[in-house]
Amino acid sequence: MIGRLNHVAIAVPDLEAACAQYAGPLGAKVGAPQDLPEHGVTVVFIELPNTKIELLYPLGDASPIASFLEKSPAGGMHHICYEVPDILKARDQLISDGARVLGDGSAKIGAHGNPVLFLHPKDFQGCLIELEQV
Amino acid sequence: MIGRLNHVAIAVPDLEAACAQYAGPLGAKVGAPQDLPEHGVTVVFIELPNTKIELLYPLGDASPIASFLEKSPAGGMHHICYEVPDILKARDQLISDGARVLGDGSAKIGAHGNPVLFLHPKDFQGCLIELEQV
Image 1 (cartoon, rainbow over the protein chains, first blue to last red):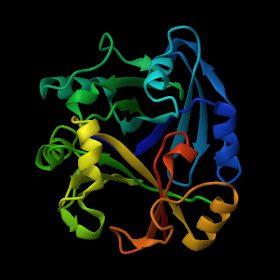
Image 2 (cartoon, one colour; image 1 turned 45 degrees about the vertical axis):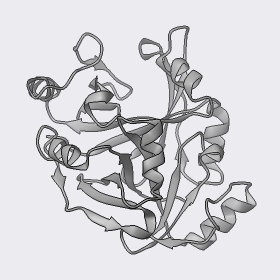
Image 3 (cartoon, rainbow over the protein chains, first blue to last red; image 1 turned 60 degrees about the vertical axis):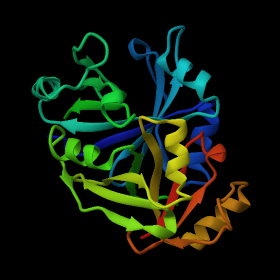
Protein backbone atom coordinates (compact mmCIF):
# COMPACT_ATOMS: atom_id res chain seq x y z
CA MET A 1 0.00 0.00 0.00
CA ILE A 2 2.54 2.64 1.05
CA GLY A 3 4.85 3.95 -1.63
CA ARG A 4 7.64 6.52 -1.41
CA LEU A 5 8.61 8.25 1.80
CA ASN A 6 7.47 11.75 0.89
CA HIS A 7 9.10 13.54 3.84
CA VAL A 8 10.20 13.39 7.45
CA ALA A 9 8.98 16.30 9.57
CA ILE A 10 11.03 17.86 12.35
CA ALA A 11 9.47 20.38 14.77
CA VAL A 12 11.92 23.19 15.46
CA PRO A 13 11.91 25.94 18.10
CA ASP A 14 13.88 28.36 15.88
CA LEU A 15 13.07 28.10 12.18
CA GLU A 16 15.72 30.55 11.04
CA ALA A 17 18.47 28.79 12.97
CA ALA A 18 17.36 25.38 11.66
CA CYS A 19 17.35 26.64 8.06
CA ALA A 20 20.79 28.18 8.52
CA GLN A 21 22.12 24.92 9.90
CA TYR A 22 20.76 22.79 7.04
CA ALA A 23 21.91 25.32 4.42
CA GLY A 24 25.31 25.83 6.08
CA PRO A 25 27.04 23.03 8.03
CA LEU A 26 24.77 20.28 6.65
CA GLY A 27 25.02 21.68 3.13
CA ALA A 28 21.49 20.91 1.88
CA LYS A 29 19.08 22.75 -0.42
CA VAL A 30 16.65 24.72 1.76
CA GLY A 31 13.38 26.14 0.37
CA ALA A 32 11.41 29.24 1.32
CA PRO A 33 9.05 29.28 4.34
CA GLN A 34 5.36 28.66 3.59
CA ASP A 35 2.59 29.53 6.05
CA LEU A 36 -0.19 26.94 6.29
CA PRO A 37 -2.71 28.61 8.61
CA GLU A 38 -5.24 25.76 8.33
CA HIS A 39 -2.61 23.39 9.76
CA GLY A 40 -1.21 25.92 12.28
CA VAL A 41 2.33 25.66 10.91
CA THR A 42 4.98 27.40 8.91
CA VAL A 43 6.92 24.83 6.88
CA VAL A 44 10.27 24.81 5.13
CA PHE A 45 11.20 21.92 2.86
CA ILE A 46 14.76 20.72 2.56
CA GLU A 47 15.36 18.86 -0.67
CA LEU A 48 17.50 15.75 -0.48
CA PRO A 49 18.28 13.71 -3.62
CA ASN A 50 15.64 11.07 -2.79
CA THR A 51 13.14 12.70 -0.42
CA LYS A 52 12.49 15.82 1.69
CA ILE A 53 12.82 17.02 5.26
CA GLU A 54 9.99 19.28 6.44
CA LEU A 55 10.86 21.77 9.18
CA LEU A 56 7.74 22.66 11.19
CA TYR A 57 7.30 25.83 13.19
CA PRO A 58 4.16 26.96 15.10
CA LEU A 59 1.81 29.39 13.38
CA GLY A 60 -1.18 30.95 15.14
CA ASP A 61 -2.70 30.36 18.56
CA ALA A 62 -3.74 26.71 18.32
CA SER A 63 -0.75 25.19 16.57
CA PRO A 64 -0.20 21.46 17.20
CA ILE A 65 3.52 22.23 17.00
CA ALA A 66 3.33 24.62 19.96
CA SER A 67 2.14 21.81 22.24
CA PHE A 68 4.80 19.46 20.81
CA LEU A 69 7.49 22.04 21.58
CA GLU A 70 6.14 22.53 25.11
CA LYS A 71 6.92 18.86 25.76
CA SER A 72 10.16 18.88 23.74
CA PRO A 73 11.55 22.44 23.85
CA ALA A 74 14.66 21.51 21.83
CA GLY A 75 12.45 20.23 18.99
CA GLY A 76 12.36 16.72 17.59
CA MET A 77 11.13 14.35 14.93
CA HIS A 78 7.39 14.94 14.55
CA HIS A 79 6.00 12.69 11.81
CA ILE A 80 6.78 10.67 8.73
CA CYS A 81 4.82 10.92 5.50
CA TYR A 82 4.19 7.99 3.19
CA GLU A 83 2.70 8.36 -0.26
CA VAL A 84 -0.37 6.36 -1.25
CA PRO A 85 -2.09 6.26 -4.65
CA ASP A 86 -5.64 6.57 -3.26
CA ILE A 87 -6.01 8.14 0.18
CA LEU A 88 -9.66 7.23 0.79
CA LYS A 89 -9.06 3.60 -0.19
CA ALA A 90 -5.97 3.54 2.06
CA ARG A 91 -7.92 5.12 4.94
CA ASP A 92 -10.84 2.70 4.68
CA GLN A 93 -8.51 -0.29 4.48
CA LEU A 94 -6.52 0.85 7.54
CA ILE A 95 -9.70 1.55 9.53
CA SER A 96 -10.96 -1.92 8.69
CA ASP A 97 -7.62 -3.24 10.03
CA GLY A 98 -8.27 -1.42 13.33
CA ALA A 99 -6.22 1.75 12.85
CA ARG A 100 -7.50 5.17 13.92
CA VAL A 101 -7.44 8.31 11.79
CA LEU A 102 -6.90 11.63 13.59
CA GLY A 103 -9.44 14.46 13.51
CA ASP A 104 -12.77 13.89 11.80
CA GLY A 105 -11.28 11.23 9.53
CA SER A 106 -11.55 13.29 6.37
CA ALA A 107 -8.57 14.08 4.15
CA LYS A 108 -7.36 17.68 4.16
CA ILE A 109 -5.18 19.54 1.68
CA GLY A 110 -1.52 19.47 2.74
CA ALA A 111 1.60 21.50 2.01
CA HIS A 112 1.91 20.14 -1.55
CA GLY A 113 -1.74 20.73 -2.47
CA ASN A 114 -2.54 17.02 -2.16
CA PRO A 115 -5.03 15.29 0.17
CA VAL A 116 -3.43 14.17 3.44
CA LEU A 117 -4.51 12.57 6.71
CA PHE A 118 -2.80 11.44 9.90
CA LEU A 119 -2.91 8.05 11.63
CA HIS A 120 -2.93 7.65 15.40
CA PRO A 121 0.65 7.16 16.66
CA LYS A 122 -0.49 4.66 19.30
CA ASP A 123 -1.54 2.34 16.47
CA PHE A 124 1.87 2.64 14.72
CA GLN A 125 4.70 2.09 17.22
CA GLY A 126 4.45 5.60 18.65
CA CYS A 127 5.14 7.09 15.22
CA LEU A 128 2.79 9.74 13.82
CA ILE A 129 2.19 8.77 10.18
CA GLU A 130 0.87 11.14 7.54
CA LEU A 131 -0.52 9.64 4.35
CA GLU A 132 -0.40 11.81 1.25
CA GLN A 133 -2.15 11.00 -2.00
CA VAL A 134 0.42 11.39 -4.80
CA MET B 1 27.37 17.88 2.41
CA ILE B 2 24.47 15.54 3.22
CA GLY B 3 23.19 13.40 0.38
CA ARG B 4 20.37 10.86 0.32
CA LEU B 5 18.22 10.06 3.31
CA ASN B 6 19.43 6.51 3.92
CA HIS B 7 16.77 5.55 6.47
CA VAL B 8 14.47 6.66 9.26
CA ALA B 9 14.71 4.55 12.41
CA ILE B 10 11.71 3.73 14.61
CA ALA B 11 12.20 2.11 18.02
CA VAL B 12 9.51 -0.53 18.58
CA PRO B 13 8.44 -2.41 21.71
CA ASP B 14 7.27 -5.47 19.74
CA LEU B 15 9.34 -6.22 16.65
CA GLU B 16 7.14 -9.04 15.40
CA ALA B 17 3.99 -6.93 15.64
CA ALA B 18 5.66 -3.99 13.89
CA CYS B 19 6.89 -6.22 11.05
CA ALA B 20 3.43 -7.75 10.69
CA GLN B 21 1.88 -4.30 10.51
CA TYR B 22 4.25 -3.01 7.83
CA ALA B 23 3.99 -6.24 5.82
CA GLY B 24 0.20 -6.44 6.26
CA PRO B 25 -1.95 -3.30 6.57
CA LEU B 26 0.78 -0.93 5.36
CA GLY B 27 1.74 -3.31 2.53
CA ALA B 28 5.51 -2.73 2.45
CA LYS B 29 8.48 -5.02 1.78
CA VAL B 30 9.85 -6.14 5.14
CA GLY B 31 13.33 -7.72 5.46
CA ALA B 32 14.68 -10.32 7.88
CA PRO B 33 15.80 -9.36 11.43
CA GLN B 34 19.55 -8.78 11.88
CA ASP B 35 21.23 -8.77 15.29
CA LEU B 36 23.87 -6.07 15.74
CA PRO B 37 25.32 -6.89 19.19
CA GLU B 38 27.92 -4.09 19.02
CA HIS B 39 25.08 -1.55 18.69
CA GLY B 40 22.75 -3.34 21.15
CA VAL B 41 19.96 -3.67 18.61
CA THR B 42 18.09 -6.05 16.39
CA VAL B 43 17.13 -4.27 13.17
CA VAL B 44 14.62 -4.94 10.42
CA PHE B 45 14.72 -2.87 7.25
CA ILE B 46 11.56 -1.98 5.38
CA GLU B 47 12.23 -1.15 1.76
CA LEU B 48 10.33 1.75 0.28
CA PRO B 49 10.81 2.77 -3.36
CA ASN B 50 13.13 5.66 -2.44
CA THR B 51 14.55 4.89 1.02
CA LYS B 52 14.24 2.56 4.01
CA ILE B 53 12.59 2.42 7.42
CA GLU B 54 14.70 0.75 10.11
CA LEU B 55 12.80 -0.89 12.95
CA LEU B 56 14.96 -1.01 16.09
CA TYR B 57 14.48 -3.46 18.94
CA PRO B 58 16.68 -3.81 22.06
CA LEU B 59 19.38 -6.51 22.07
CA GLY B 60 21.47 -7.34 25.13
CA ASP B 61 21.71 -5.73 28.54
CA ALA B 62 22.95 -2.23 27.66
CA SER B 63 20.86 -1.44 24.62
CA PRO B 64 20.31 2.27 23.91
CA ILE B 65 16.87 1.28 22.64
CA ALA B 66 15.87 -0.16 26.03
CA SER B 67 16.33 3.25 27.67
CA PHE B 68 14.47 4.94 24.80
CA LEU B 69 11.54 2.55 25.27
CA GLU B 70 11.54 3.16 29.02
CA LYS B 71 10.78 6.82 28.29
CA SER B 72 8.46 6.05 25.35
CA PRO B 73 6.93 2.60 25.97
CA ALA B 74 4.80 2.76 22.80
CA GLY B 75 7.94 3.29 20.69
CA GLY B 76 8.71 6.26 18.49
CA MET B 77 10.90 7.83 15.87
CA HIS B 78 14.50 7.36 17.01
CA HIS B 79 16.87 8.80 14.43
CA ILE B 80 17.35 9.81 10.83
CA CYS B 81 20.32 8.75 8.72
CA TYR B 82 21.88 10.94 6.04
CA GLU B 83 24.48 9.68 3.60
CA VAL B 84 27.80 11.49 3.25
CA PRO B 85 30.60 10.70 0.80
CA ASP B 86 33.43 11.00 3.38
CA ILE B 87 32.46 10.49 7.01
CA LEU B 88 35.70 11.73 8.59
CA LYS B 89 35.68 14.89 6.48
CA ALA B 90 32.01 15.44 7.38
CA ARG B 91 32.71 14.84 11.08
CA ASP B 92 35.66 17.22 11.19
CA GLN B 93 33.72 19.92 9.33
CA LEU B 94 30.73 19.59 11.68
CA ILE B 95 32.94 19.65 14.78
CA SER B 96 34.63 22.81 13.50
CA ASP B 97 31.09 24.28 13.13
CA GLY B 98 30.44 23.51 16.81
CA ALA B 99 28.52 20.21 16.57
CA ARG B 100 29.16 17.34 18.94
CA VAL B 101 29.67 13.70 17.92
CA LEU B 102 28.35 11.01 20.28
CA GLY B 103 30.60 8.42 21.91
CA ASP B 104 34.36 8.65 21.40
CA GLY B 105 33.93 10.48 18.09
CA SER B 106 35.18 7.62 15.97
CA ALA B 107 33.13 6.07 13.16
CA LYS B 108 31.82 2.55 13.77
CA ILE B 109 30.56 -0.05 11.30
CA GLY B 110 26.77 0.12 10.95
CA ALA B 111 24.02 -2.20 9.76
CA HIS B 112 25.05 -1.92 6.09
CA GLY B 113 28.76 -2.57 6.72
CA ASN B 114 29.58 1.14 6.23
CA PRO B 115 31.17 3.59 8.70
CA VAL B 116 28.59 5.50 10.74
CA LEU B 117 28.52 8.02 13.56
CA PHE B 118 25.85 9.92 15.48
CA LEU B 119 25.53 13.66 16.09
CA HIS B 120 24.24 15.11 19.35
CA PRO B 121 20.47 15.76 19.07
CA LYS B 122 20.74 18.97 21.12
CA ASP B 123 22.84 20.44 18.30
CA PHE B 124 20.26 19.48 15.62
CA GLN B 125 16.75 20.57 16.69
CA GLY B 126 16.31 17.61 19.06
CA CYS B 127 16.79 15.18 16.19
CA LEU B 128 19.33 12.37 16.51
CA ILE B 129 21.23 12.29 13.21
CA GLU B 130 23.27 9.34 11.99
CA LEU B 131 25.77 9.94 9.21
CA GLU B 132 26.64 6.97 7.02
CA GLN B 133 29.47 6.93 4.52
CA VAL B 134 28.05 5.61 1.25
